Image (tube, rainbow, N blue to C red):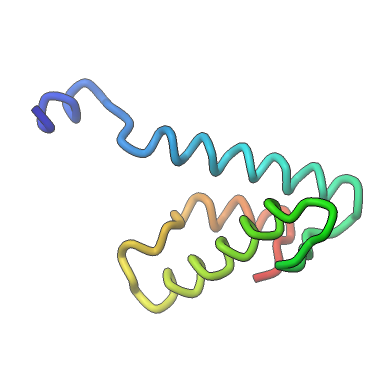
Length: 87
């Protein structure tokens, strides 16, 4: 069954990817308003965004230590780098 789903192009991470994209757009909105992408972990006015940013930083560290289940993709890292995200 997995093979058949792969064969038709089933997106296994589509829900997680869509959620990531929603937070990424939220970060871009913050960047537009503030002029930077330096969000502290305990970001008072949007604690959930601060938590998401913290998770991206931790996932990035895992990525660089070679942990395969790091929770971040090369494309996601590229997107964050392109907007000036501070790791």
